[in-house]
Image 1 (cartoon, rainbow, N blue to C red):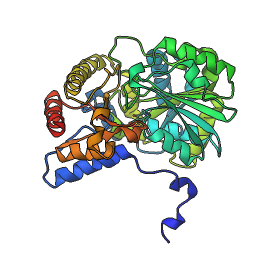
Image 2 (image 1 turned 120 degrees about the horizontal axis):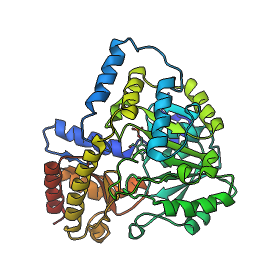
Image 3 (image 1 turned 90 degrees about the horizontal axis):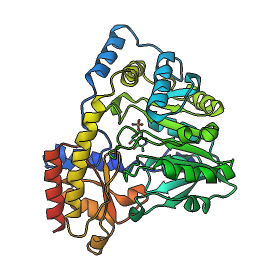
Image 4 (image 1 turned 120 degrees about the vertical axis):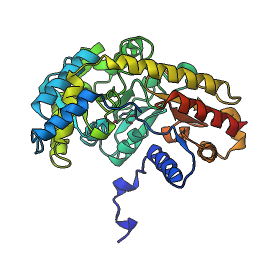
Length: 391
Ligand SMILES: Cc1ncc(COP(=O)(O)O)c(C=O)c1O
């Protein structure tokens, strides 16, 4: 028995490069090297105390058994409240599914619907897992290449040019990982006009970073803006990024009843219900106070400004100002004559004590992603190291 036993589906995917870089940074640290990791996609803030209390209370109450596969009724109601209050989507708790992280919701939605030869349009740069999931399902990734000069946004003609009779999904992620781009309502409305002409296309709206927008604008999302399209939009959200609960593994999705039922069917034969304690904690996250988010946004905005200014002061590097999430997508094209590729560039930076992820991991090129979910002092130190490494 060997890797020859692996399925074709498995052989089409590789392990996440962001995790690989984070693991390498941890390994170096364990060897005593001084490495700052700006490669990971999670808030560095502590999980709010009321959420921790809810988890403890659930344990003490003996809330340690199976729950309904697609989540407790209480959490589905809390998630529906979140969809309505925070995203403007009128979600019926019956059409909500609770998953082990937003990642599982996206995987299950695609696994339930994508087959051999189906095409999935993904704006690039993209979150690393989207193309891997599509390939695992046998689908074909159709990149919709966006540019920093356009704020990594795209227009209706860009979308329409890629649509074929085999197009099954359009994936949207705003605020976006790795670019921090935010899609304004006007942009989504113009995309909706195209989608109305192509009724076979489903839309996955990954809104996991929705509370982290720094422009003061309200988050815009397709199912809320165009309710007439809502019967083919699957909106994914969660508590990982909004409440610093990455380790709890809770995501939520809402969409057409047939798709939510299909996701549940898959879940009932794979992972079963998400962890009962985590579900109780997520109820507290959705139903509890949200005011702390204003403070987090302030902190993230200050860190963003620090990193953007530092990047743009380094000769050969540039980045647009990200409007949301906690990533800067840095262009290093003018320096690429010094490196074989952007992976070599990130290994060079790692040698100088900073872990970041190559742009190519996200379907971009000649640059890297910096996560600014770290303390200001740490970020200043990291930016000095990057400047010294590239001097
Ligand atoms: C764009 C995007 N979607 C979904 C997820 C998944 O989040 P979760 O940890 O809830 O699975 C992530 C996490 O990095 C992400 O960046």
